[in-house]
Structure formats: C-alpha cells, structure tokens
Length: 463
Ligand code: ARG
Image 1 (cartoon, protein in one colour):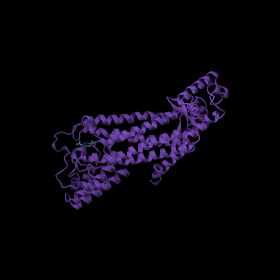
Image 2 (cartoon, protein in one colour; image 1 turned 90 degrees about the vertical axis):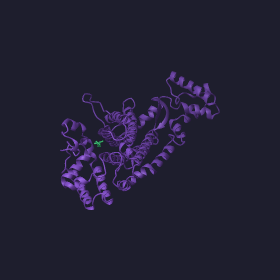
Image 3 (cartoon, rainbow, N blue to C red; image 1 turned 180 degrees about the horizontal axis):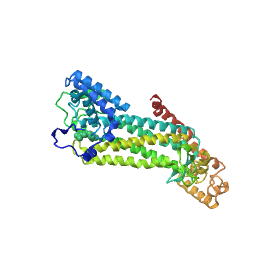
Image 4 (cartoon, rainbow, N blue to C red; image 1 turned 45 degrees about the vertical axis):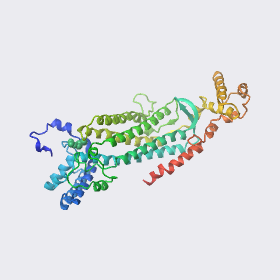
C-alpha cells in the first residue's frame, strides 16, 4: 500500500523498515476509538464551516460502515499499513475518493494516537474496576463465612497473635479498594481531550476543541498542545496502579500457595483451579497463584519500560512513544486475566477451619493476652511481659502450652494468676476482646463487611 505521506519521497520505504516502523499489529485494537474520534472530528469540521455538511455526513456514514465491516470481519487489517490511524483513513479514501481525503483536515496522527489511547484506556479502566469489585465481593463472601474461624496471625511468618480468617481476607479487601481509588484517580486525570493539538502547535483552522472534547466524553480540552501530543503520564499512572494491584494479588497468591501446602493445609483449592504433576501422582499444585505471582513481574517491568521510554524525550512527539502501547496493553490484559482467574479460585476454595484452629494452638499466640491478664490485675506491662516470657520458657521445657500448664506453675511466678487465666487466654476470647475498629473480633469485622457492602459493593450492584 502506498504511504499517505509519500509526496516528498523519491523511493519506496524498505519493506523491513516498514515492518519495523509499523504499529498496526498492536494498535488495531483501538479501531473503535479511532473511528469515534474521526466521526466527531468531521462533525466539528462541518459545524465550523471548515468542510461542507454533505462531505461531513458522507465521511461519518462511511466511517460507521467501516466500523461495522471491521466488526463483522468483512474488512481485515492490512499488516503492511503503518498504523490503525493510517489504515482507517486509507480504507475511507479508497471507498470515498476525493471526499475521504478531507477527513484529515486540521488534525494530525499525533492527535489521533493521543486521543485514541486515552479513550481506549478509559474503557479498560472501567473493566478492570468492575473485575476488582467482583474479587472484593468474593473475598467478602468468604469473610462472612469465616467470622469465627480462628487462625494464627503472623509477623516474620512466625505465629504472632490470634486473628480470624475473615480478618485476614478483609485486609486484602482494603488493598483492592485502594486499587480501585487509584484507578478512578487515573481515569479522572486522563479524562482531558488532546484532540486539536495537531502535530504539536494546534492549527490555523477555527476548530472547536470544546465541542470535540465534550462529545468524546472528556471534561474539556487539554490546555497546551505540546503537552497534548507528548503526555503519556496517564499510561505511567495506569501501569503503576495496575502494578500495585498485581502486587496485592501476588501477595494473596503467595499466601494461598503457603496455605494449600501440607505444611499449613489451611485451604484446599478446587480441582478445577489446581493442576497435577506429570510424574508425581499425588501432586495438586497451585499453579494459578504462582502464575499471578510471576506475571506481577511483567507488570512491574511494563511500568519501568514506560518511565524509561519517556525520561529522555524532548517535546513534543517522538516515535519512541509508539512503544507505550505494547507495555500498557500488556499490563491491562494481564491484570484482567489474573482478576478473572483469581476470583473464581477464591470462590471455590475450601477453608479447613479445624486446621487453622489447630495451628493456633501451637506457637504461644496467646502470650500477649497472658501478659495483658496480669496488667488488668495491676502489674506494669513490662513486668507482666517478663513473667509471661518465663512461663513460655517453662512450657517449652515441659512440652506444654499456656492452655495446659497447671495453675501451680502460673502461681509460682505470680500470685495474681487465678483459675480464670484459662478463659482469658482461650483463643476465642483473645479474638473476641480485640473489638476496636479494625480488629479481628467477629463484631468488628462484621462492621467492616457492612461498610464495604454499603459502599464499594453497593455501587457494584448498580453497575
Ligand atoms: N503509530 C504512531 C504511534 O503509535 C502514531 C503517531 C505517529 N506520528 C508520527 N508523526 N509518526 O505513536
């Protein structure tokens, strides 16, 4: 296909250079946005008297036909074309002849790529937000079923204090909630329209940038044309929000890997969401979690790619920026894929409550509560801490736990200990007592769940 810019060239472009230069293999996914942008552009051109009403109508109608034809497969992308913008204009001109050539009046491809990518990513943000909400819904459901499921909470992966499985899951709900906010913020910042920036310095035609911005769903036009065509902050911010969300999914995945091991056996993954080994017949592997953990790396890489791509670029557009799309599309595709796989895996996972409770019985996770018992009877915390430490040492020596250490042993270290110590350090009690906002007590977690249901998930139902 002859290049639309061939006027000043004496030779055809080398075919390998053409392939090297071309972006259609990855930017064709923006065909819908490109066509929408062009339709509003020609409407504006005729409103402003820059092209005739009849030309505008013919062009808009044919662009809509091209959209239908691409959708139905009647028109296939030409991989020899330079990019999606050139391709659509070329098809239009082939179909309309002279009239089609008027479409590109008062705009540039730099305009188009900046516009199309913002519009495309706005749509993708909506999709990702919807998928995060689904994941939150499934975590909340599991949490509701496990308000009383006591398990050890960890620091340094050492058993630390008793919590519930609901409390643990709701920590992830908060992370994913913040991811949604980051995506909303990102949407808001990218929601300004670059169209009309031209190649870099707008145009001498009396275009109406407010009109195109409004009809393409933006808050308004971008205020500087150099910035309009050379800003890719929105790709970087989105890649960053996605990398953070992936990091959260990766942490959850890591925990599911641990929890589904024989060492923990806190959960059992559904057969449909785990895989076997080619040689070891007994194996049931959490591949999904491992892949999510692995794919987080490429999303972090995409963010680095974008930051590095931009950091040395003089204003305004430089072809380096064509590299933005593969990186950000990969991040968007990856996060969508991971969210759609993780949610049903969580939904179908069996929680082995007894194993969690048993793990809680070892590791002295009620030691803090034992010290707090003495504090409530008048001791200073540091003294209580020391006595409890000594009790733990005795238990370790005798192969006992604080729950079955005889009362005489307790009394040897402090006469404040009475028979009620055993209730005070029962794991249920330890959890129940942590009922302040944010704590693991079933009543505190239930309140948190209600809050999420009335905010994040309520919006989700209305979607
Ligand atoms: N395919 C290009 C990109 O993705 C479109 C803009 C090209 N503009 C230019 N002046 N070569 O960035």
